[in-house]
Amino acid sequence: MTSLAANSVAASPRDCAGGVTLYRYHLSGHSHRVQLFLSLLDVPCRIVDIDLFKGEHRQADFLALNPFGQVPVLIDDGVVLADSSAILVYLASRYATGSTWYPGDAITRGRIQRWLSVAAGPLLAGPAMARRIRLVGLDQDPTAAVAAAHQLLAVLEHQLKAWPFLAGDNVSIADIALYTYVAQSPEGGVMLDGYPSVVAWLRQIEALPGFVAMAGAVHA
Ligand SMILES: N[C@@H](CCC(=O)N[C@@H](CS)C(=O)NCC(=O)O)C(=O)O
Image (cartoon, rainbow, N blue to C red; front, top):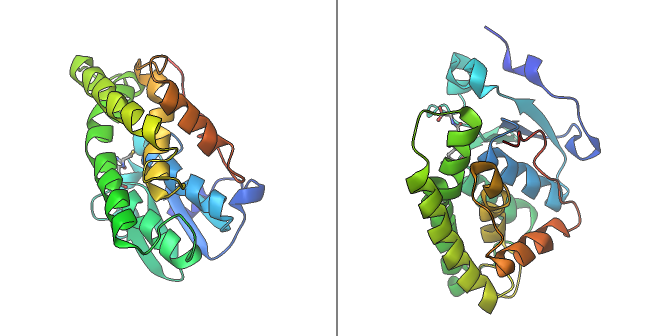
């Protein structure tokens, strides 16, 4: 069995060694949203690649970190945390208090949670699934996933016409939770041409200091 530590990828300037370790797969949008947020917060981290195609997420040492066998997993000062939304909340609460990423007021928190739920629901069923069918080459009709993706994009377009960011006037973890799979939608055959406010929102996130794109995506 390959040791997880042996899979540490070469560090980029922003992926430098530190107290935080991120277990991720480079084509996983869930992983990218955490890597992106770490970079935006300028929190140094070590990245360990878990190759889903080789089944490394089913190995005992990874299952000990996340019994669900899914990336991402974050370790910080001995704290092991799985689930991208949970990790975003943790990072914002630990490293970005007093910022707009995850403010304490009830209304903004409620709005942010709404989008974290969308990230775990319609975003997964729509853009993420359409992309997965194509990239993995699943023997599955993508029609329902593509339709669900456009349904979600229409909702996002409506929202982002009214507000610059998903939870209001300021960027928050809600935007990070949805960014990656929306940005990668074309990989699933879901084009963004009809959604100008969504595209403008993507560009705003990409202009943030510390932004890192998802590396190594395979375009169909
Ligand atoms: N709720 C989890 C979902 C993570 C997830 O679906 N990860 C995928 C990669 S994008 C994975 O590890 N899949 C492997 C598997 O489920 O066997 C999160 O938000 O982190």
